[in-house]
Image 1 (cartoon, rainbow, N blue to C red):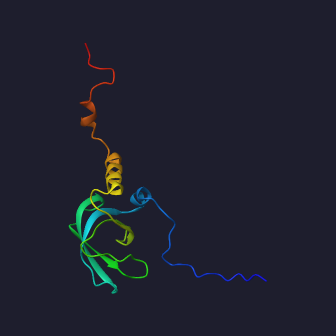
Image 2: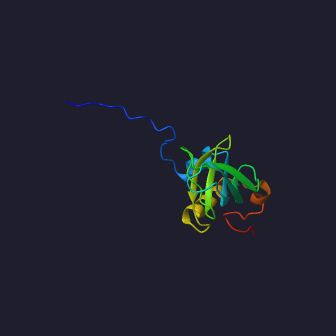
Length: 132
């Protein structure tokens, strides 16, 4: 006899998303340094110093909930890329060094998404070479 017992749904589980999918979904993306947390096993707010804004507003600091059922614990002194939703909620948080290949790839992705000004296009040389 086989019994099928439904497993409780995890309220905070989400399908895997690449950092590029997360970037497109997020309202704000920033490289941060975690300056302060409430403690290792305590829930509360973490203070994040923004080192580089990749998308959205450019505030110098953020305060994010940490160590709750749906939020990964921030660790003081660590660098990270944080993806925030429209209400400021953490969608994802990845601890990374500034020279980490994932961070460099995300920066290149951001640069490719920024439209090139029309004046910059008019000053480029023709692919056919110089006129004679």
